[in-house]
Length: 327
Length: 246
Image (tube, helix red, strand yellow):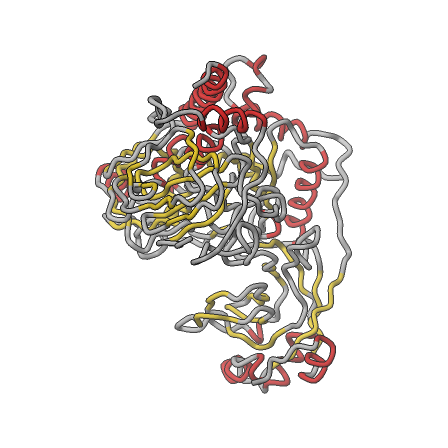
């Protein structure tokens, strides 16, 4: 394989150990990862490949059942365009390549049976700084070889059905309830714990002007560039828990959104918190993309997530029906 | 017996976390309450509870709003947040809560100064002390681990003598060796992993702080008391077979 910009193995994260300072990690766009796994008959939290931007290529040494979801990174198989958001069989000797970031910034490749790497502390997610999880605790490098586990019963059924087909499937998942890929997006947030401590002028600017995602952004955090945000008066905050989507404002006034590989605790004042339902769309934004923040209530945030989950359950059910009806 | 209800406040951090605020500032009484609440939550998890992360004067409780919602469909229009808040308050309202205590003392061997502690001289001169006085002060106090964070197994400790307090370096080092013992302001800490950092490094321990193959995966736990024990470089290399003096 060729690693490209960055390719790591991720699942839905490593929970239960944050009190020891062990980060959660996991897929940046968890919805795309879940759908990729559902498409190949895996449990939705199975380990899959997270490919960032472009340049990654994989040589398959056996026929495999896969699905590609997430951002459109112009995937090809042996140079020919390949559809996303549907299960397919890739032949032994074929090369899957990600050529260019057309929209979004991360694609997910699921493998029938899942990637065969050991679970470390309950997860297959790669924790690069600690050198654990994923593929030998690191990002993938040239010539790395990994294997897939045995397909599940439904995965095997899908594999057999797809092997008989002479073309790709005519359907694909309608993904807009789960993730969007626009260059400028409105992201919904609830008020952060220290919201009241910011001056009114700053709060007005925060909600009315766009913030640009800087090139200094990665899986740990998105650094934003835009109107300066100031506190009414300086104050000392003791370190406390932070989470995916927490928007912190350090003393330079430029917000940082904490992402999948965030630390477990932080001490900067928090102006806002991205709602869970919008995290996948945020995680797909590229550097130079623009974000507008829109305030919603906690109640709206929770119903949005529950609604999305119901859509996910319906999708899982729909995919099962498709398989039982020969795709 | 503890009355927890009077001292706590619950607020949302996100749609999937709540913060239980416990008092103000950094002190042992608050720390004991934090540990007691952590223990209560972990031994009586509500459905949808994922984990709780203790800090100096708060705990952040992670839950699945989905699981809370689907396991409380009878609660009608209540949001998962309201359900979780009520469950936590009910848990704190028990009459027979006893304090969770921990009397563990962990000794941390440290080689002070030299290449292992390149900033020892600076810490000494900054405070008008000799290096051996800094070592004596640093290793004669007992430190309380309030919380872990920043990196796996990194202890946030209290109890350092103000005589050796030293500001952070003006420009952080790009890589600090694992086991490095440092001072930043009035805090002291130990780096579990190689990371960039701005602390004044006064020594290094051969003890491993992050143990991913073990459960729990860290040498130190919140509530532990730490004693630094000065050792020689010979002891460091002899006992641990590590070649580090280059």
